[in-house]
Image 1 (tube, one colour):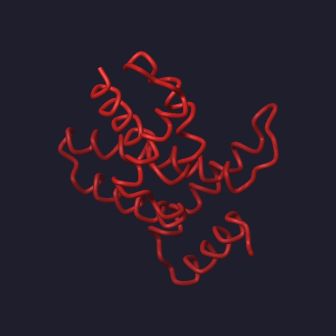
Image 2 (cartoon, rainbow, N blue to C red; image 1 turned 120 degrees about the vertical axis):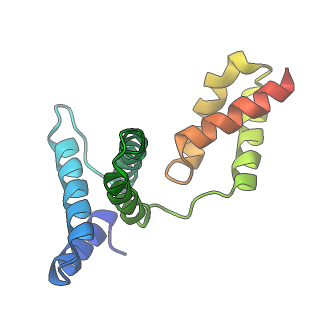
Length: 152
């Protein structure tokens, strides 16, 4: 099975042949982010998990940009960013449904022994390795807050 980086390279070549500017630009930006991570001081080997985390951070940046563009009255730029998010999400594994995320959070709360909202860090520490790449950090954080609030 090909690695995620090999799939990205192949998809970039296909997009270039098809003259798909959106996909070509987005994948070039992704490859650039991966390369940047590779040459950072103290960088380790870039594996699929690292590539997934890079994709997640790029999606988060795009979402922030969409909000900024909408507030600034630039809907055409917001649409471009949303299209890039769509391309990037194609490389993420199947996302957890709301009920699956809720169950994972409940399990993490039980595992960490959390009793109140003060224990959120413990719960997140237990939860994030299990949901890496399959749930957004903000969605996981919101669910943890909601469930801890119910505990008191």
